Structure formats: C-alpha cells, structure tokens
Length: 116
Length: 154
Image 1 (tube, one colour):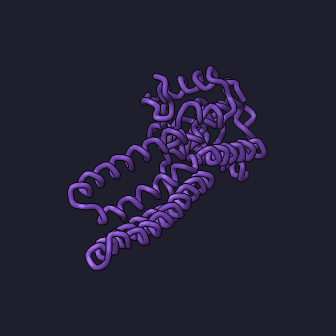
Image 2 (cartoon, rainbow over the protein chains, first blue to last red):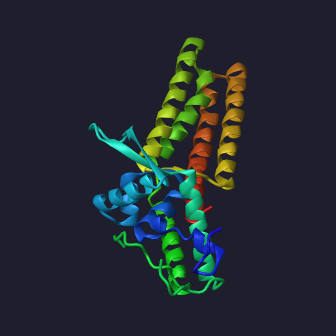
Image 3 (spheres, chains in turn cyan, green):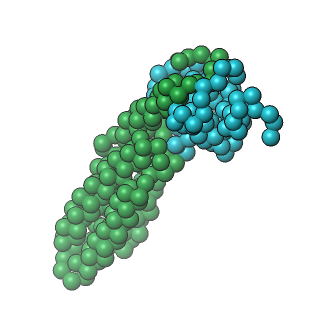
C-alpha cells in the first residue's frame, strides 16, 4: 500500500471521481436500485439534463456506471428510456467512499489539512 | 450542487451533511416510485380472471389463460417503465405479500374448480371477488414495502 499523507488506510477509499457532489448523489441513488431512468434520476437530484449527462459520462468513463436504452411503454412517440445502472466497480468504490465518510463523520478520522 | 470540481476531503460535520444528503435523495426517489393506482386494480382484475377461468368451457379457458399471463407480463413491464425505477431489493415484507397473494390465488383457483364441479359456474364469482381483494391489498403492500426498503437504503 502506498504511503498515505492523510495518515489512514481509509484515505485510499476516498474517491475523487465519486466525491464530486453530483456524482456522489448519482452513485448514492444507483447503489440502491437495479436501474433508474435518466429522467427520474434528473428529477430526483433536481439537476438539468446537461449536468446529469456530463456527470454520468465521467462515471461511465471511470467504469462506475452503464447506460442502456429501451423502448418506452408509456410514450406513444419513438422516444426511448435511458436506464442507468451501477457497475460492480462503481458499487465497491461507492461503498468504500461512504465507509470513509462514516469514519470521518464518527470522528475516527480527523479532517485533513492537505485537500486532495 | 452542480459542479464537478474535485471536492475537498470533508471534516466531521461536512461528512455528516453529505451522508444526510444521500439519505434525502433516497427518500426523494422512493417518493417517486409510486405506480399509477389503476395498475394495482389491473393486477387484481387479472388475478380475478385466473380464478374465474374454471367457469369457462375448455376451449375458451385454454385461450383465456395465456392471454391473462401475457397481460400480466405486459403490465409488469409497464409498471417498471412508468415508475422509472427497477428496484434492487424489495424487502421481506414485499416477498411475504407476494407469496401470500400467490398462495391465496392458487387456493381460490382450486376452490373455483370445486365450485364448478359441485355447484354452478356462477359460484366462482365469490372466490374471484376474494382474489381481487387479496391481490389488490398485496400489490399495494408490495409497493409500499419496496419504497420503504429503498428509503431505508437496504
């Protein structure tokens, strides 16, 4: 394990890709569902299409999320639903990240002056 | 919260705020998971249709059952796409409601066959009405349990 300037092994679980606020919230939703529709995720988080797309792209490129398109049963036009799901790697990274947040929240690991 | 800047490693209160926000997002999503009320009624009608099926003659019954199965599958798909959420887990209470409804419908189906054989086809309306009630209640309980499961983050 590499030297940890934060002074704890848990610091390695602190994932900057996930910790960006919108991406953390996306990951938090995805962690507890099999799949969620893009529009439902957007409305739940209260962000714009562009913002959600941008952050999803980062998660997909990091291997933390995947998207699939299916025909919509609730629409008469040709639009399709975009289903978003979390990959096993995304789940593991999120769980480790949240475990680290809990450690910090519980005061096990104090705040670090050198921000990552 | 619409930035993608690398966020600072939080201190204790900030970490607690982040964890609270994650809980709030799950609660918000569970609030959006409600399927249209008519889908609950539709599932109950399909169950009542299964229980009614012994009242029909062989050829009609043979045609009715596959149609009911197909409609059930279509309705399940519609319910998922209309809520926009495919749940990872539903919780023990939801499975209990599902199992109870399944056993109830099967028992009522056998009662229907017995009534058709011993009394009159019209008597199957009674078990069909009971099946409607059981499946309606079970479907609503299943959805509530699923939403609660998500809200608690299990």
